[in-house]
Image (cartoon, rainbow, N blue to C red):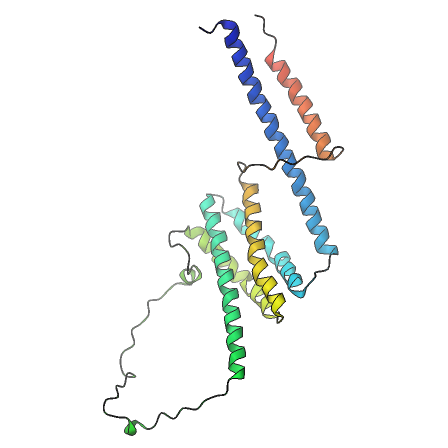
Length: 256
């Protein structure tokens, strides 16, 4: 049978464990804030001071700089559920990749057409056609079912995906899609086009994940050491000392 002393010791142990976990979680939050601040600073400095290695990289950076803010604003507005934001990101990326592929196909077709000679085919007079010939021109052509712009935009996607996210992504694409495709059309070097078409979707996907991590507090935090002497380290030590001092006062003394 557990006596009073053991029971009080168990309660004290559990309470201290809970308080220690809160301190650990707070430390991790400070660590993430620190690393995010450093990364953002490096990104800004890199964009301003580092010239691109290729024209494709330069076009990619320009497109990201010009359009990321609008994507982020609309993404953050979808605050009701994660499914809305997931649908937004997936629909936008799906449309982007389809349009880049289509741009490549059209470009290849135009190049091939320029190399081919026009071939004139003499199909003969109607009176010269044999009696077995069947004329289909007068047959009624079955009308295709009308598809809304939003449905066409979502081609290839799960029809059960959140429609709010889909429609918001459609609106953003109508606003910035032509800018992206215009930048891509100006790249004629194959290496530049490959860099742009491959890394633009990847970068956008990473930015969507980063935005979601900021919106979702339950995402596991990275275990990163904060350099000694930094502002974050000093702030963390101060907070921990104050918190531990307050918690020691809360625990009080036990007499057994």
